[in-house]
Amino acid sequence: MSAARGSSRSVLLNPQKKSLVMQRFPKRPSSPASPASPASLASLAFAAALVLGARSASAANVCVALDEANDTLEVNERKAAATVLRQALVANHHVVVTGTCEDTYTAGHVRLGKSMSVMLTSSKGSRTARAGLIDELPAIYDQLIRALDSGKDLGDDGVTSRKNATLDQAVPNRVQADNIARFTIGYGATLGQASAPGPTLGGGYRYELDRFAVDADINILLGQKGAGATRGGFQAGIRGVYFFDPTASASLYAGAGAAFLLSASEIDHWSYSGSGLAGRASVGYEFLRESTIRMTVEVDAVLPVFKLTRDKSFGEMLGVPTAATGPASVYAPIIGLNFGIGWGATPQNITKVRLF
Image (cartoon, rainbow, N blue to C red):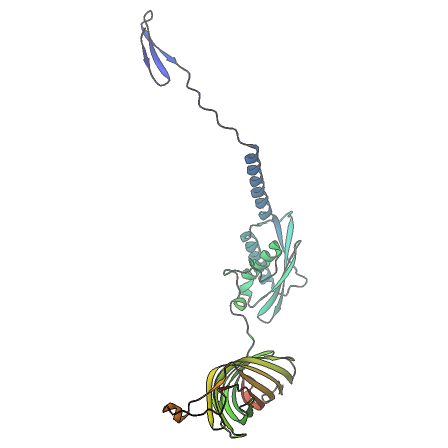
């Protein structure tokens, strides 16, 4: 007897029947698969339940209805609005049916000129939005459905997107600021050891809202002899202004800011000069805010963060010893009493005059 071995079969020669007999040998058993652990089975079951639950929640059967008692759209517009609402619900993973449903989304429209107020109500609550045009109903419906389904308000994250933003949301209205050109003239004094009152001239711009304003101005400090001292300089600064009664015709206000200051004084025939940053603080009262004519009374203080240093005399520059009779440095803050008047053709175009 002879045999030819294969992977799973062998051929035997039967001498009596003189025929070939095919004999099948059993396959080698494969290694048994390791059984799944209870923890992995529980995780898979939990994930499957979440997926099924999410699908069932997102695929809820809903109906569409219109508040015909209060709706002001035309008949054809109502039909079109109902169709658009169905499409928006389908896009947000709802199944819209005409028979028995789990929830009903009811839309109401109140037209005010070209715009309209849109209210969408379901068992989850109600949301209201404004459509500038009837063409914006698809975007408005999408926002209202997202807000109702997520429990959020309009404008929250996940409700408004690039695809459903309306024109008013893309280009929102802004409060118009008054653009006020200012010419300043006033009278102030340098305090401290370098006491020297004198006039000031300047100008700038004010951008004013009801409660807040921003001033940017330039002032020239003119020299004026007094008490043995002379001062002059240049100031350019910016400040913020806060009105305590924003809607009244007259309001008390306070301001604070910073400035770059160049200053010079003469004390006992010795010259002092310096430059650097300075803080600004002001308190004032503005009248006639509702009109095109405005008047202000203000006290303004400029507080430099540097001291004026004594300049070298002509003899010191030549190397000749000179006895210094004045201090090496002086601090020279400035305070001024301001009065202003402004005018313009419109409330957004006012020229303001104030005294420093």
